[in-house]
Length: 213
Image (cartoon, rainbow, N blue to C red; front, side):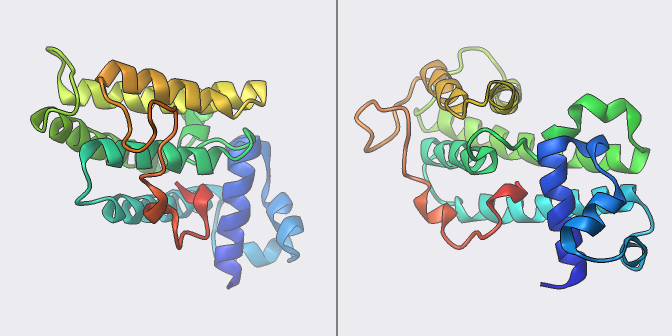
C-alpha cells in the first residue's frame, strides 16, 4: 500500500473514532510512521485529506451499491443495514460521512460540498430501493414520498451509529433496522422473523476496507 493510501486509511480511522477535529497531521504521521513533512507531499492541507477520504469512501460505497443491483428491494435494503454493521464494528466507529455532522459548521466549504454529495448518493440509492419496493409490493409507505422514506432510513441508521457509539452498544443498529422493517411491512427472506438477514453476504465478499462506507 502506498503512502497516500496509508494516509487516507489513518485519517478515516481517526475521523470515525475521534471526529475530524480530534486529530492532527502529526497524529497521522505518528500512526503510519513517517515525518509530518512527508504528508505535505501528498496533501497540502487537512481539508484536502478530508475531501480525498470522502471521495474514496463514496467510490467504495458506490461499488457496494452496484453489487446489490438486480436483487429484490428488501434484499438491497438488508445489504444496506449490514454495510453499516460492518462500519460500526463493535460500536466504536461512526460513518465516515456522518462523523462530520457535529462539526459541519466548522469545516471548509470544499469539505461541506463533499459531504453534501456523499449524503445525496445515499439518499438517491435508498429512494430507488424504496420506490422499487413499493412498486413490487414489498414495502408499504402510505402517502409518503419515497424520498422522505429514504431520509427516514438514512437518519435512522446514522442515528443508530451515534447512539451505539455513545452507549458502546452495537445492537442499537439491529433494533433500528427491525423498526424500519416493521414500518415498511416486510420480513427478510430466510430469517423466519429474526432481526438480521444474510441476503447481503455476496455484497460483503471481497471488501477489505469495510469501514470505507
